[in-house]
Length: 294
Image (tube, rainbow, N blue to C red; front, top):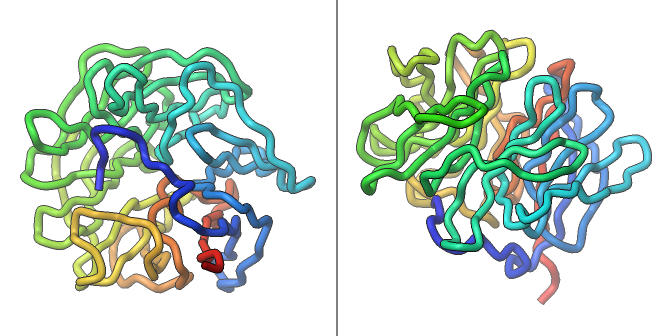
């Protein structure tokens, strides 16, 4: 569930984090590293050499060749959650940082190699999820007047534009590579399902229809495939995406149609919150978890 107060305290989850990749054709999984603390949500960089993940409020860069992690300097933005998104040219990263003053999430941008964060969304809570392919617009979930809807805002700040207007949670907006569509998830039909709309918010269309709760659709760089995470019906409330659950990573064609399960794992929150596709659309990066011994 979206949190409008204090950021999560992942150290209380008592898990080992396992950073993995999976081949989308064969389903072969490869473990890259294990961490004794919670890490979440790897982004794959354009050059294919690094993964960007978050842990304990900060962002880290994981070098795929050396398997070494290094913190990305982010100034006061040290309460970031797992909603980070890389700019199309990978020069910057946008984050959802829980501000010290009121504990609510706002969107900030800073250089991917580290630097001072710039506030983009003064209204809160705002949870980032998408960056338009032309680099000019950010898409995010915002709570306004008690409802969670999808908004966009110019990357340099300004007036936000509301795209959805339905009761319940509308979340996870992400642009297609051609910039024509925004994919998102919505609970408006009772269960959490994957939806797609035009970039201006028109023609909102349901894309998954099964008896599960489907979250965070991510479009492959070639635009052909959607990856998303699925919770079992009855295992969670439709509007919640908690940690430490048995979940699936599923794939479906971007034009719609039947899904296939790529990975079954113990995870949920932190596993696939951001676009984790490799630049060649052949692999996904994700995080699974293992409970520590009591």
